[in-house]
Length: 408
Image (cartoon, rainbow, N blue to C red; front, top):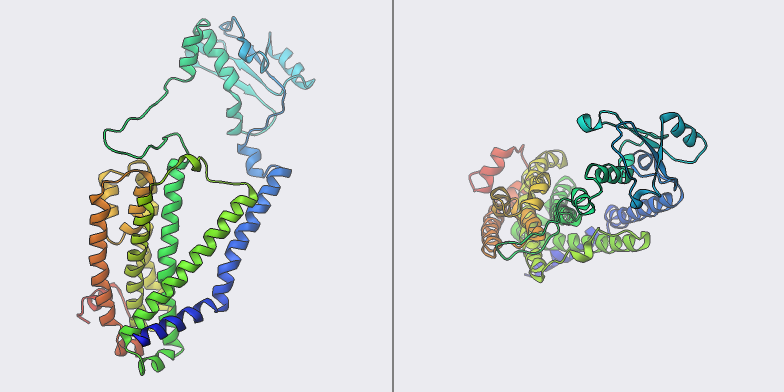
């Protein structure tokens, strides 16, 4: 036990005092801070080129319209300040050149059959320009329905959707950006934290093998004690990094005045954070065990990076299907991802963010994940022995799988 604690202390101190770690710990948040501050400053001063194309440019001037169909009989009071009627295109062009209007519409003669309306505007703004069409839409709808206000209002806003769940569900507004945005952020955070912490294990072992430090350690410490001390220490390092980055992220949002949309209305139950701690610990133990096994087998960083690609895939899959996890969290596919041990640490947290998951499902996921962790750590301990640490061999998935079950 004393040797494990000594390895733990040494590994933690050596990692957090390393120049590359200190630069990563503080430089990444500072870059994020600089980008957030600069983007906020730029938005105050001038619109970006992207905003010029997709954003709305409000000149404060009304727009004009010409009705060639003869359909428009009355201009409702609600749009009179936004739309001015002209008898022909020449009159509208003259008003535009004189700065009286910012743009104008031409309702075509066959509008009832074709629905065609031409829009004359000065700037190339195909997306943002569509946001200005509310008044003309209301004008046309009002005249098609002969000024029946109740029908006009219903046509412009045809459905006021209220969702009632037949099971005990956490309320989520389907129109809110946070309904998709927050599960995505939670999924991304768990991916970064789990894989980032576990990859420190791989880097530590392979670096010590290349620098031949492992030869000195192998003469005085049991390989299993060495692996245990490293897993605990590097888990603490990953947690420290997460806390620092999270704190700086909150600071950046406060300074720049940015926030997650509708976050105040997006309530997460207390059980979410309990499950989060459990899945983080088990997920980290699973992937750090796999990384330790890879590090013990491969001869250097080059081979390790090739194997790491295969390790990333299970954690990336929930990110690839985040739309399904966020919009259909209780679907069959989402449930499978959240129960399968290699994807459950990330997928289950996405589901728990999106909806109320039946208690037996995260419980079953924890049991399956814990069993897999025990299997992987036992297999990694078998691989993490002096012969492998001192030699290293060419490794592929077949060799790695056989070594994990004790057949190599």
